[in-house]
Amino acid sequence: MKAERTLVVGPSWVGDMVMAQVLFTILRDANPEGAIDVLAPPATVSLTQRMAQIDRGIRFEVGHGEFRLGYRLGLAKHLAENGYDHAIVLPNSLKSAIVPAFAGIPRRTGFLGEYRYYLLNDLRLLDKRRLPLMIDRFAALGVDDGKTPPQPLPHPRLMLDAARQAVLRDQFDIGGEPVLGLCPGAEFGPAKQWPAEHHAVLAASALANGWQVLIFGTDKDAAIARAIVTAVQDSAVPGAVPTGRLCDLTGKTSLLDAIDLLGLCDHVVTNDSGLMHVACAVGVPVTAVYGSSSPDFTPPLSERATIASLGLDCAPCFKRTCPLGHTNCLKRLSPGQLEGLPEELAVNGAR
Image (tube, rainbow, N blue to C red):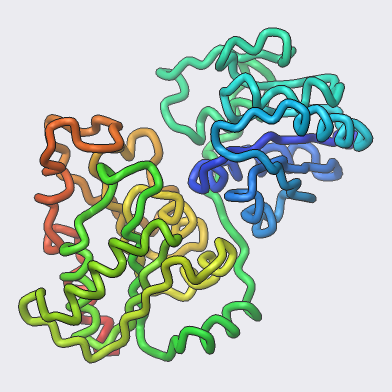
C-alpha cells in the first residue's frame, strides 16, 4: 500500500480538536508509514504537538469569521508543494474547503456542509441518527463512504511532558498535596457554566482537607475565577477553612502548560468545555458538569469520567444563554450532588 500524505483541516475549538484525535488514530492505523499534517488556527494547532499520530501541525492565521481569501490562496499555493494525496476537512463551512481545493489535492473529503459541491470531491451526507456523536462523525471521514470505522473507537490521549511538568511544579509551587483542578469557564457561553459559588464550595472543602486547588482557564475566565477566590477568602462559604493553597491560573498558562498541569491533578471538576476534553485525554479523574449541552453529543471520553447533570425538561437547549432566564440546570445542581466527590475530597486529603 502506498504511503499517503494526508492533510486534515482541523477544528477551531479545543474540545473538537481533542475529539478529532479519533480520526487521526484511524488514519495512522490504516497508513502507518504515511504522513499526517493538520492545518489549524492558533487556538488549537498546538494540541497537535501532544498527539503521537501527527507529523506536523500547520498554523492557519485566520480568526473566527474571517475570510481573507488572498491569504487562503497563498497558503494553498505553498501547501501544493507538499504533494498531498488526500485532504479531510472537518469544519462544515465553505471557506474551510478553499485551501485543499486550490492546493490541488486530488481527493478532498468532508460533509456537504455549506454546499461545497465544487470544493470537495468526496462529499458525505451527514446522517445524524447514524452518527449521533461528534467522534462518530469525525471517525466516519477516516474510512470510505458507507464503511464502518473500526470499533470500539479509541479515546483521545494527549502526551504529557514530564520535564515541563517539573518546571510548572516549581513555578506554581505545587507540592505533595493532592490537587483539585477547577475549570469554571466555557467559551460557548454562560449557559454551560456551573455557578462560581458552587465551585467555591468545592474549593473550600478541598482546602480545608489539605488539598491544593488550581483554577484553569484563559483570560476570558478571569472574572469567574476571581469570584471563586473571593468567595473562599471572604469565608462566604459556610465552614470554609482554607488551610491549603488556592492558585488562580487563568490567563497565566499556554494550552500546552494547561495540558501538563491538568496531568498533575488528582481530580478535575469542569464544565462541558475544551478543557474537559483535555482533562479526559490526559487520563485524570474528571467530573463533567452539563447544563445547556448534552453528553449524548459530546460526552467526556474517558473511563475515569463521571457526568453530573440534572436532566431537566428544558435541557439540553444548546443555547449560549438560558432562554428561560434562570439557568436552573446548573444553579440547582449542588456540589453535594456530584457523585462521590465530597467523600473523595475528605478521604484523599488525609493521605
